[in-house]
Amino acid sequence: MGSKLSKRKRISKKSKKTVTNDSPYLSSTFPPVEEEEEEEGEEKCYDPADSSLIFVNEEDVLDFEINEFKSLRALMSCGHAVTPMSLTNWCRLLVDQGESTFVCGQTGCDVEWSFEEVCKMALLTDEEVKYFENKMFSNSKDLLDVKSCPSCKSSVMRNDPYNLCVECTVCSADKNGIFMFCWQCLREWRGPFQRSDRCEKLRLRQ
Image (tube, rainbow, N blue to C red; front, side, top):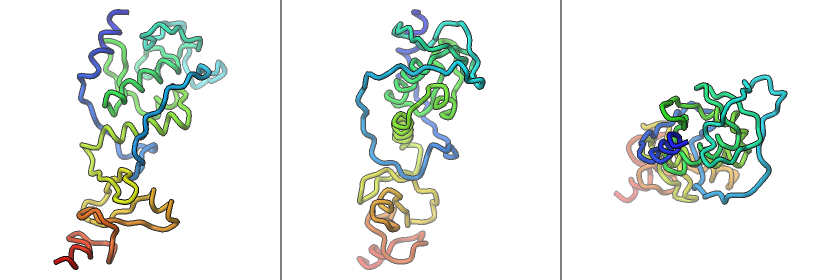
C-alpha cells in the first residue's frame, strides 16, 4: 500500500503535458472550464456480460483510499486491474493536478493510456467526458496555438497558422451564423476571410 501512495504523492511533480490533435474527443473550440462539484451517486460497475473486458480476481491497484469498490476487476492495457470508480478517481486526480495524459498509477509502471481507453474502462458519463476534455485542453494550452474568443471567452485553437481569420464554433452556434475574429487584434473579423498579414480593422487604423 505504501508504494502506491508514494507514487500518488509524486504525480504532481510530473510535467507531461501533451495532447494528440487527432483525438475524436477534442475540437477546435472549448468553453471555459467549470469545476465540477463532487456528487455522491451510484457506484459504476462493469457488466459481467461484457466480453470485450478481461475480468480477473486481483487487487484494484488504483484503490488508494481502500474504498473496496464492489465492481469486478478488469485489466487495463498495461496489465493492471482496476474498477471504473478507482480509474475515474485516479484520472481526475491527474487532470486536476495539471496533467493532460493518463499514466498508470501503479509504482514502476509508466504506461500511458489513451483517452479512448480511459473512457471505456472508467465507464465515463457524458458529463465526465466533457469535464475531462475541457481539463485536458486547458492543461495543454501552453503547447498549442490557443487564444480566447473576444466574444464568449471560449478557448479556440487555430488550425491554420497562415490565416488570421478564425471561427469560434461556440459563438457560431449561439448566433446561428458564422462568427469569425482576428487572431491578431482579437476583434470581430471584417473583410475577406483568408488573410495572413492583417485584418481590415488594422488596415483602417493605419
